[in-house]
Image 1 (cartoon, rainbow, N blue to C red):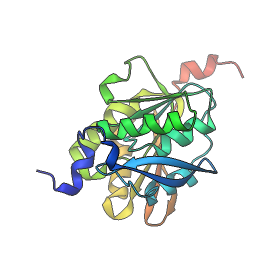
Image 2 (image 1 turned 90 degrees about the horizontal axis):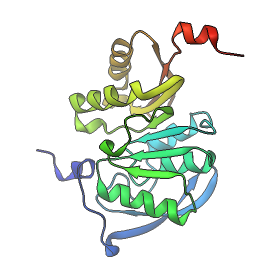
Image 3 (image 1 turned 90 degrees about the vertical axis):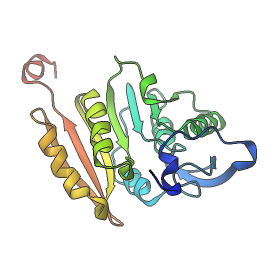
Length: 216
């Protein structure tokens, strides 16, 4: 049984008009006005973890499929879509209200390259050039590990997942679990620290035979 504070991680219906709120945020270096609502994660601002992630990750790949896992109202997905207009950005969340907000925000910002969907609605053959995530740690270790075991293997070869995790919510043990779970063919590094958060980078390497025959 989750407390009321956890309900935003699970299915919440789309927000009624009177629950919507408009806030001003910085996305990809520019000020933007977005719509949020109660019942989703961090409705009043870009939360600290997401801000640390956005400040400590390289520009996203210019094309291909990009994944924001646990999108909430969309600050990561919207930033990716602004920075990489030719990429297809997948905003994945179990919360229908969050997905509704991502769609509203993409529409209002004129971003046509965002697909806001539930996890099972991502086609099985889609692989990702990057994953950027502020994952829902409070769903519990079992759920969190299952989530990462499902999505990290869907990275393209020579591609990276970037996860931001609060240090006092177990970033170091998560880093150890990632390093132990994704072998061989992956490497895990702590890429940055800030405001009590760690940014963990999981790289999926190419298999040796494909590296040898790839052209420079």
